[in-house]
Image (cartoon, rainbow, N blue to C red):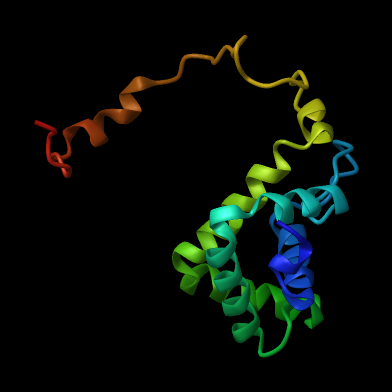
Length: 148
């Protein structure tokens, strides 16, 4: 993927909304999701998520009445509230893309105390949680048909 995947206005809006999703933290010494390297990773790895992300950014711009990045902070907050309520799957895809690229950045992994390596083959140990939290899901009737 190249930067031509999104228009300049869409890239500016992506950078702006990404900074709102995950702002920079001086306390933890991590960049925001609007960081140049993280944004480059997002653009390079959009792949099958390109169309939903474009749709989300276009919806965001429609709600703003102009490019989202051109709004002042107060207006951005109001537009984001409406975007959360009306963005649907495209908005969820946009947020997921931002999060996945952010949390694979070396600086972020270091701040979380993770080794800078692939999770396999060594794997990562996970603390056991409360398995009873899954009881409501297990109690639901089956929604998928069984394979023969």
